[in-house]
Amino acid sequence: MKKVMITGASGLVGTHLVAELLGRNPAGGAEEYAVTAVAHSEQSWTKIDWLLQRRGLGDRPYRRVAAALEYIDDCRRLIREIKPDIVFNCAARVAVGKAREGEKLVTRNVEITHNLVTAVLEQASSPGEGPLFVHVSSVAALGSTPGPAGCIDENAVMENLAGASAYARSKFLSENEVWRAAAHGLRVAVVNPAVILGAMSPESDFWLNGLFEAMRKGANRFWIDGEMAFVSAEDTARAMILLAETPEAWGKRYILSAENLPYRRFLGQIARTLGLPQPRIRIPRWMLRLAVPFAPAMAAVLAPHRRCDGSEIMRTVPLRYTGLAETLSQIAAATGRESAR
Image 1 (cartoon, rainbow, N blue to C red):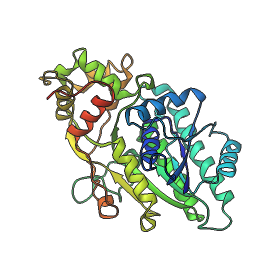
Image 2: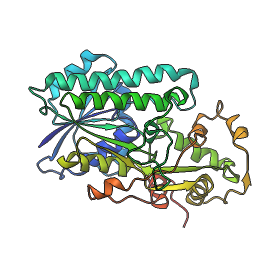
Image 3: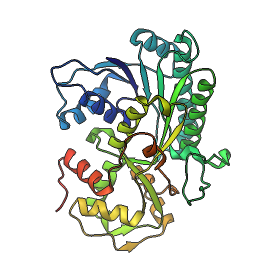
Image 4: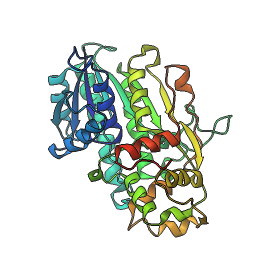
């Protein structure tokens, strides 16, 4: 049995990772994974249990721990008490649509990652010992220069940190903390997901929930220019587990991207999933930005997304991506809104 610690367990990736790991434990049998979910407050557990109930896993046991990871003593205590074999680090603030909190977001995210890798290194008896550290970064940490195929790949680098968004800077600097620790003997694997789509509880304030609601209220009529790369939360969780189980994959980063889609097609598929008419009216990007202070969720489709190549991981582990239509149907089913046939 492997002891697993998941930080940021109440977030989008964290909740799906808890569900994916518990789903691998046979009902009533010996556990393959002993899961400890770490969240920032006691109020977070409802977000995890919401997804577990919808996945038929509500009776699977797991340990809950509330901790403030911005304090290194809390991180040291967790590692010392849990003694995990694997740390899945999903802890990060997003603060979509809250530009004034940008610098706080950068500081907090880097602080959390620094504290965790430091605590793990301190507990290792020698380099290469101690837990495996699987870290969730983002394609935002890789800059915008495409590779030979015209897509961002694992060799991309951040060219201009000063011109990057607060979120991109926080992801870049946090990932650097992981690679710094790897240079000191920490065993690591890093995933760089594109825009992650998944089911989250209504109380989570997740941007996709807000977008679904906006579409039902009439936003389905509109579309904007641009393109996005996306991956499902379930695929992200599955990829992290597969990498953790594959030693030859350690010490590397992997982009997670299922498809590159124009915004119009993405919004059109959401409309189809919700049984709504297709978008027909093109609006300029600057006009939609005016709505962001009132509808922060819309910021998620305003960022200058790029084409991403997520094929490298499929040459390393047996991962197959879920397509957009199936992902949105799963989200609709989990939230009680069946997709239109």
